[in-house]
Length: 75
Length: 328
Image (cartoon, rainbow over all chains, first blue to last red; front, side, top):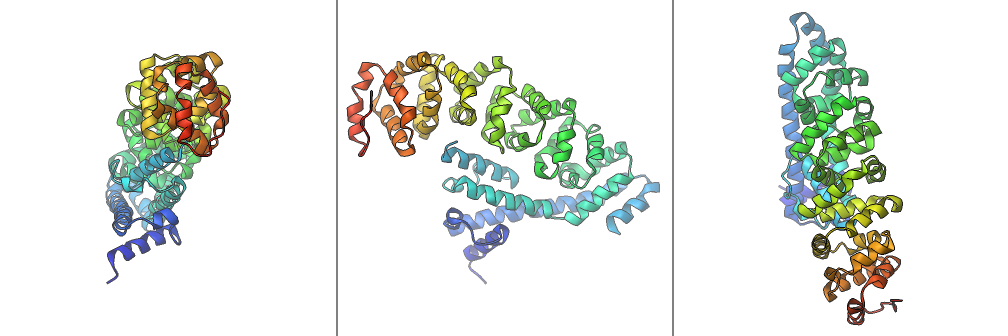
């Protein structure tokens, strides 16, 4: 299991698309983790919201149109 | 804008994007703004690309349905986050037609989640009758970061409508976190002149001098001069508050160019105020001029100082190795 700090820094580098610039790179391990966790949490919240909204959205479409709309949405 | 203020504004924007409370990322206060902006743009792309295929299909589905129905589904089922993420995939004409049928409350919610870079064509076509209530609602909620992200993308008529709907405080706070500061000079030109004294008074009453100085810092000299004169015309007590704020946040390098653009009379009035006549204040001013190469901005202020204050200068300069002789 990688050290939490190293793993957090790696997550930030993935987000950044390469090495972190100097000042961001010089943050403490705990700060890297807080930043990476905040980005991941925001992404997870959004994924969840999109899933829930798509599921409930079709209920509002009139039955006649539901088929074509479902086809566009889900193929 | 000073580096400190730029970083503060960027930290606020990043906190907003990630759904954090102001202050949660305070530990980034030593990171240069350019690094934070790069990180924020990457995080924005990541969030907007999350679920991108589904969002594109939602945009396509919206084409099949009449606008009133899309508006109903948007408001009652999809919610503001999904609408904001999908908006970039919807035909701009259709999106505007749908937006006209949504409540200002809902539109404000969705605006918070939008990436203006991806919906520029929609923003440009939104009628001012819609901009005004949404701006008012965003201002009421204190969503200055959101509004600050949009200025570079909206036409003049919308800027005018939005500024008309905002309080002086909301306007100052929005200007501070503005994404495209280069648009600020033009936007201030759209303000009715009678609003400017109120904006300055608001800075004094709400401890917003750093925000006000940053605003002045962005303006062209032609536009800054008359406003700087209004600063000098304020009561000495108010100017003392400005000096205290500048001292605390070390913003002398922002204040000096403002003083230089004042009329000679205004500068004399300002320099005669006792709040400038302490070694601590003069040391801050001279040190900033020395550090940031602002000697040309410094000289007019020093020349306007009364003799009692000038007598303090040798002591101030003695502490500053390498300071040139000043023509005071």
